[in-house]
Image 1: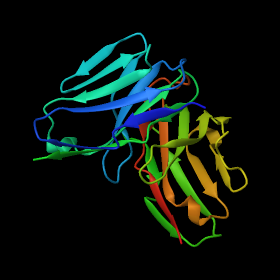
Image 2: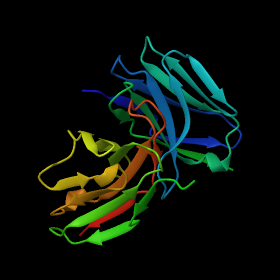
Image 3: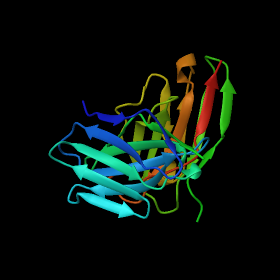
Length: 111
Length: 115
């Protein structure tokens, strides 16, 4: 069935360094790829998304890239700050009916 | 504007007891989702509503789980009877379009503990 694999499961970086989280999806019909940030005790919150007609999207310190051929997409956070510490989820959607989430990456930013 | 509101935030019940969760989506959002989130995992869809119609309930364990969205606004998710394995966070989300390919706004979730 449809699947989204996310790596790594845990990522620890020094404040100011970059963090990269990678995901792979299985359904070639997927055309929408949101990224969510979930802080402790809260629901997931969308931080950036990308559609299949775009290869890269950037919003301040956050960027997402998409390789449709390889079915890979990645989240890049530059100049990390302690408040970036959270669990990040990638997801894929076929534009209609179901969003499949990855298992999450727990990011620790050390001050 | 208020976000997605869920209640209660926490619930502890004994196994075999019933439990219900309530969700009030963002005003004007016609699509409502209930997700299950187990510890250390991503959300998994239980049911999706378009207005008052359940359009995808394929992952809802219908022997013990039920949901309703009367009048196409608020929704309740019920478990009867609860089992130990139902302990998890139940998330409600809503979005403004039926295609699914738009931002979903999540509530804070209800953490259920079955003892």
